[in-house]
Length: 580
Image (tube, rainbow, N blue to C red):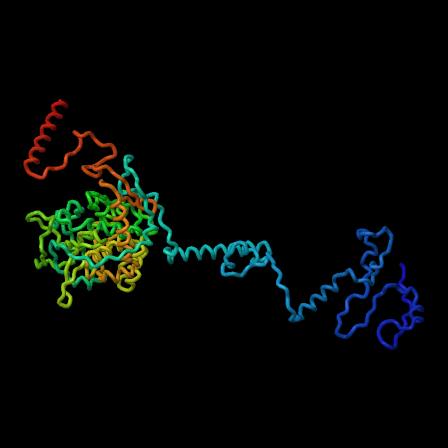
């Protein structure tokens, strides 16, 4: 076993380390070369003095030769050892120096931008996640779960924040466009928003019919003491078009105006930009006069339900919540409501002439028809038949009322239960109806303004059960002044008349004939078609029948009716003989 001899160690009486005298240094045998030495203070940390465990040579170092000794291979050289750097890093970690010098801000494309959207920016999401693989996966799952919960919360709280129109591919045109029709023009609704026209106050040419007084007890109805909606099958309601109105024919013969229409047709034109469903209006140019008509059984006779809602209605025709079924239901509710809220004690207000559409001895619904005239130009006047439904004495003054009813069919579609919200949050219920039925409410307001009504009553009628569309209850009745309500729903009267004036000017430039305005079922625009003179008469179809096979219009006198009946009997007899 080889021993280890320790040579003499010189004594340094002046301090640490070997003596400063060269003689003492040279007297040390086998003195190692390249031993680093530096004076140390008491606060300095000392590391290793020597390390004989390292290899004396590093063949992998560039420029090294086999068997050659490099100065850095010494056991006392720690220049390539990172242990001292680790100690220095640990010591420096507890010390911070504030740099007050001006720094140059260089652009770093990888630096995340802390704008308001940075938190949910998927591109920068990687920079805020941990580097470990498992922690990164878990953090991503947590972020995805938070984002999904946030989207669901926003979706259920307020889906109206994103006003996107429903898919209109399921909507059908209100009238079948025939191949022989010639499209003359199409007008986008965006051009209607810029129109404006002011008309002076109208004058009443004639008032027909009669009115019953409004029952004020219905103003105190609440969902807790609601009333069942009654049915009035004995009273007749009339939806007569313009050219079939005998009073308008008489006024046209007297040259009282140039343009003739009804309040239903005018309100449809005035509120056209709010419409979603398709509608059509027949325009007849006769001489220098213009008549706006509706077809028999037109969609204008019904009331739309959830037309402007984001929630699509079932597209099944037999479903009680389909578009057509709800329209028919709303029309019957509106008629019955307008009669139930009246005081039916026989006390009526009669006008200059009786109901022009009622037959002798026929029980009709009390309606007042006001034939009013507006001045559109120096030589152009418009006459419209406007309806008022009731009368009320307020401060010894007689006020006209219009009566309409909103109907609730299923709270799942609207998201608001009327029975729970009408008493405490009536404004929220009205706001929901303005969102889902913006066009219908705007048309009712326009009709009240055209008729010069002092008050419009809105009834809230709901089904007894969501699946029972025959029985209904009245939950509340609220009154509004038409002008104030128009301001509340952002309905501009100048813009309304601007739309009517532009369409009248456009139609007056056409030659004599029959035309039809059709609202496109899928786009916010209206088209003008040139149609044959016999269009929409006697069940007009795409392929016209032979003249002898067409249904003849009914005769006006009894003799002609008897003649037609005898002809039909003869034809039926001949048909039976041929079959035999």
